[in-house]
Image 1 (cartoon, one colour):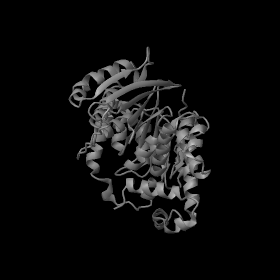
Image 2 (tube, rainbow, N blue to C red):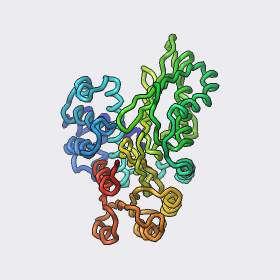
Image 3 (tube, helix red, strand yellow):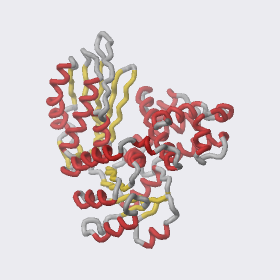
Image 4 (cartoon, rainbow, N blue to C red):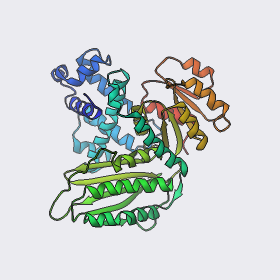
Length: 406
C-alpha cells in the first residue's frame, strides 16, 4: 500500500525527469494523479508540479531569509530553471551542505502539499491513518503540556544547560562527549519553559542514541532577526564508527519533539547523512501569534504546521469541535482557522459556539471549505474564507489580514 514516504519518493523521481515527456508517460506518479482526477494526461505532470512549486512561494511580507523562501527558491531554481546545485547555493548565499538541507526541506513541503491533495481525492485508504484514537490521545497530551505554560521569554542558556545536565548520564553511557557553546549572552527565546525542555530532551536523546562511541555532540547558537537557531551536530569519532539506528513501536523521541515544537511555533529540522547528524531548532525571540486550527485530518494539521513554521505564527491543531472549545477557553488564540466538514458537529455550529463564548466572541475566524460557501461565510461575519486546497501563500495572507505580525 502506498504511504506518504513512498509517495515522496515518486515526487522526487518525477521532478528529476520533469522535462522528459517519455518519462512522464511511464511515471507512476502521473498514473496515480490521473487516476485521482488531479491531471487529465501524463503530459500535464510537468505543469502540475511547477504550479505546485509556485504555490509554495511565501507572501511578499515574509522575510527573504526565512526557511520558506529558501526552500521555495531552491525548488524553483532547481526544477523550473534547471540550475545546478552549486549555482543555487551561491544564489541563496549558502554553503552546499546548507543548500542540500533547503532542498530536502522543500521536497518535503512540496510532497506534503501533493499528498494532501491525493488524500483529499479519496485515494488513500483509511487504514493508512493508523490508530487515530491513539494519535489523538498523544496529541491531546502534547497540547495540554503546551497550554499548561504559555510561551514567554526564557533563558536559552538555562534551558540548554538543564537539558544537558539531564542527559549527561545517557551521554556518558554511550561514550558521547557533550559540548555547549552558546556565546557570551544569548537572547531570551519565546517558548513554554517545560515544553522547550521536553523538546530539547527529545532532540538530545535522539542524537545521542545515534552517535558513535567517542563522538562529540556540539551545541551552538546563531542569531538572526526574530529567531535564534540552536544548532546540534555530531563530530564523528576518530575511528569513523557509526551507531545503528534505534527503532521501536512507540513514537520516537524526535517525533514527539517535532510535534511539540510545532505546537509551540518552533521549527525543528533534523538531517542524517554519511557526514553525520545535524539539527536546527529555530526558536523565536519575538512573541508568535497563536493560531488554533480545527480540522479532523492529521495530514492537514501537519501541512499547516509546515506552512507557518518560521513565520511568526504558532499553530495548535485539534480534530474535533469539542476539543477546539476546550483549548480555546484554556488558552485563547489570536486567530482560529476552522474547517467546515467536521465529525459530529460541523464548522458552522462550532462557529456559533465560539461566538457565544465570551473568551472567543471577538476572536477572528478564518473558515476553510472544499464547498463553495464564501457567501455563507461572509453572512456569518467570518474574517476570511479559504477554498480548499489551500496554498501556503493563501493561508499566510489570510492570517496577515486577520492577525498581523509585529
